[in-house]
Amino acid sequence: MLGTTLKAQHHRNEHQKDRRAIDSACQYHGARNLHNKLKPKKIGYITRELQLTEQEAQKFWPIYDRYEEELMSIREKRRPKDTTDEGFPKRPDFLKMTNSQAEEMLENHFKAQKEIMALEEKYSIEMKKAIPAQKVIMLFHAEKRFLRDVIGTNWKDKEKRSRRR
Image (cartoon, rainbow, N blue to C red; front, side, top):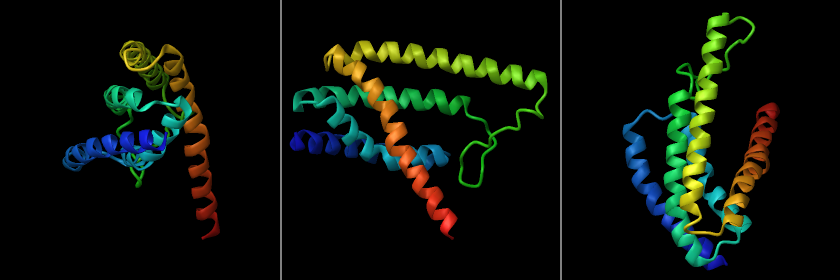
């Protein structure tokens, strides 16, 4: 199992080297940086949760990489252009926005959700070629748990550290 995780991480690290060269030439902000920083943890987490065999991991991770890139692309094109100093989108003041601004925001939200649903459906078909359907279902749940458990914990730790200063 450990060999599987290490080989999957090696594959992902090689892919990351290629992406870093592209990312340095592009204007990516805090969300992309956070994503890249947490990616090794996510690989290990998903590999463990799905109990991927070496053969499954070799077939699965390239498909997942493509899925994740397309997902990030959808999110980035819908992300507000105003950002904080750290590069994260500024949260709009919902009560001060006009009705037409709110309508536009709702429309963009639903368009993005439809694109994401179509992407998940497209890639679940691809992923089923590499891993059983049960593990594809487990993947979507594992991603949500990763967000809650790992990212939530990191965020809370960061808040605690900033309060101590």
